Structures are given as C-alpha cells and as structure tokens.
Length: 229
Image 1: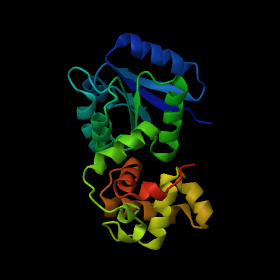
Image 2: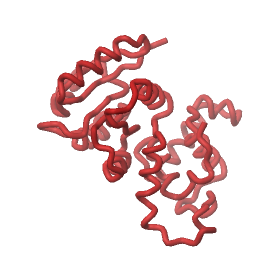
Image 3: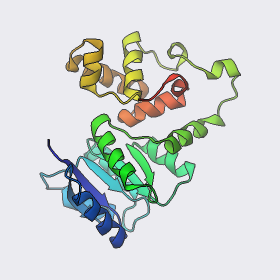
C-alpha cells in the first residue's frame, strides 16, 4: 500500500519536530515537506515532483499565515487536502476555515489517534469533520434561520439548487464518507459516471471540494437527515 504523503506547516519548531517524529513512527505515512510558514512551504513545492497529498497547517504563522496559504493552494494545488491544526477552537475560526475549503480542523490538544484518523479520512474521502466542527457549522447558520420547526427539517426537494434524484442520492452518500468507487458499487454505476455526478454537484452548489459539499449539506439542513457512518 502506498504511503500517504504529508506536509507539516508549523512555525513552532518543537511542535513541528514532535509531530514529524510521531508520524514517522507510523508506517502508513511519509512526511515529504516541513515548513515554518506558508511562504516557505510554497517555495518547497514549487518545483517539486513530490507534492504532498495532505498538509497539516497551523493558522497563525509569520510571513504567510494559514488562511493566506489556503487561498493560494486552492488555486495552485487544489488536490492537496488541508487540515488545520491550531490552538484556536473558536467556532468563528472553524467556520471560516471550512468555508475557505479546508478538509478538516483540529485543535492541538487532540489525541494523536485523531490526527491520524483525520489524515486518513481526508485522503480517502476528501474531508474529516468531527462533532465540534459539525456543531460549529450548524451554529454558524442558526442565527440566519427564523424558520418554523417544520421547515427546519429540510428535504432535498426544497434546497436552493435544482438537483436530480441521482445527484441527491450521491450527495447523501458523499456526506456519509463513501468514496467514488464505493458509491459506484452501491449504485451499480461506473466510477466515471459518479465522477460526472460529483462534478455536477460541485458546479451546482458552488463548492470548491468534497468538504464544501458537506458544508452545503449542513448549511441547508440536510445534515439533520444524514447519519454518518
């Protein structure tokens, strides 16, 4: 099995080196880049053939912070899954980063096992949202909703975009963390057909990536009828 290629972008050397050592102990990961800020990281991968698949990124760094780095990576290297690893656990920061397109958000006091799970999940499905992240996304829209109790339980028939039944079905499965090959097998369709539906979902919802599709689902109350695996 190929190892997941990882980058660590963190200005605190002690934390960066400690995380590097822990990841090296795990046989499923390969750290291909380390940097103390976003600018250094971009310089490292500019002419490199060894692009990381998942980047663990701090939010508060000198020269180029995490948010600035995300904006550039979304344009230049959209395939890199970005997981924020920071001391900030306020919901406004969580939502801002998820909306910007990150694949996950963790605080630095989390367990190593969750970091490993987040990396694996983001690499496999495109996102890792724990309950704290999901709650932050729900709360971010709560103040915008003055709807009645009955209308808060939305269905796919009244979301603000025109999805086909098949697209709605696939969006549900994406939110349940199924991969494209798994969805193809479940629905007896080809992976290429699922790729096409996923592309249409991204275009219709204006999402940047899979994490954005989940954010769209949360924004429109669809998370209320989804049970994650």
